[in-house]
Amino acid sequence: MRISVIGVGYVGLVTGACFAETGNDVICMDIDEKKIENLKQGIIPIYEPHLEELVKNNLKEGRLCFTTDIKETVNHGLIVFISVNTPQDEDGSADLQYVKRVAGDIGRIIEKYRIVIVKSTVPVGTCEMVKDTITEELTRRGVDIPFDIASNPEFLKEGVAVDDCMKPERVVVGVEHGRVEEILRELYAPFTRTGAPFLVMDVRSSEMTKYTANSMLATRISFMNQIATICEKLGADVMMVMRGIGSDSRIGPKFLFPGVGFGGSCFPKDVRALIKTAQSYGCDPSILEKVMEINEEQRIAFTGRIEAYYANDVKGKTFAIWGLAFKPNTDDMREAPSVYIVDKLTRGGAFCNLFDPKAAEVASKIFEGNPNIKFGKNQYEVLENVDGLILVTEWLSFREPDFERMKGLMKEHVIFDGRNQYNPKTIARQGFKYVCIGRPMAELR
Image (cartoon, rainbow, N blue to C red; front, side, top):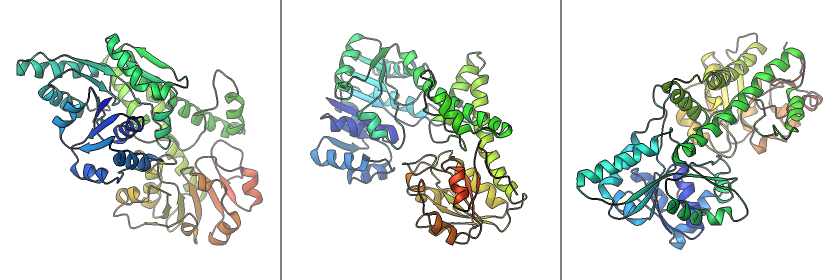
């Protein structure tokens, strides 16, 4: 098939590259000229495992190309995906200005039948807005060109996005006509041939499914973080509790790990957008509001525990920070807990040595101008003469470090584990003091 993707951000780039990999003729468009020129040379603007190889291979084979020309893009594909950014507005709602702008462009350009698919994460009713906007432009032109609108939300997890796209757990589409369902089934057939469900529903339900999924996952995280707080008070081990409830088939083990809270471009933005949507329709989103409140409290409480260890005086102390991205296998720093932790400690007069396997370049821009931070080349370099190690992101390379080497480098042997990555007994045997979340541990001095 001939496919057009408008918006070459995280979702658009992964989607376009994966469709090209299955033999489709894909053109990806973005208004960012520098980004497009880099992509034409196989230079990827984000870190995502396997994505660079996928893009380069399909560029070489001629199945994937990049452009800034919206007219060329709309004229290219029977299917036109809208994958532009929907940032959070000041009031917490999703900012749809880019979606509406693209819809207007399509209406002004379209010459023959097209299926316009909204893949961006958008509030319920957005597809109807896109349809109305295109229709208005066609009316203004005085032409009657048929088109269909559909919803196809993405469920890509950063760090495994290529696998999620090529081997999805499910594909959700919202359509108005059976002919669109038939075409989309054919498009997704290479991805669903092993049995992944292809779920067809009305457009509004499809839009709502995306927000509900992310809000449910965010709720599980905040719920377990609150349970961790209770465990600390009761002397229980939240990791044992997690295993106990995760073995229940009705609950399952995923998204139950307590920690410093969720971040990234999806969960915070999408939960806030659903809260705003619910409020605008007179519904009470109190559970979702509490999810966000607990998430904010978690990083504050963890930082407070670090400060408490030093009698609430971190001035002059030096900390090694392991992990800056909001999760492993990405360089995404959006709403990453590390930003709050580093800012709070350095405002208190502490110094922070930062290391992340992939996010250092992004982090350097975020922390630009902060004289109390420096970056290390590896996880051991940042440990030299520090008063404590703070683990924020659970990269695989941090799982089994050389503790003897660490002891030789660190001035004070204390680990603040924001992801409960280590076993407290093991850490104690290695000669470290250990501060974690929701688990029995040595008392603070």
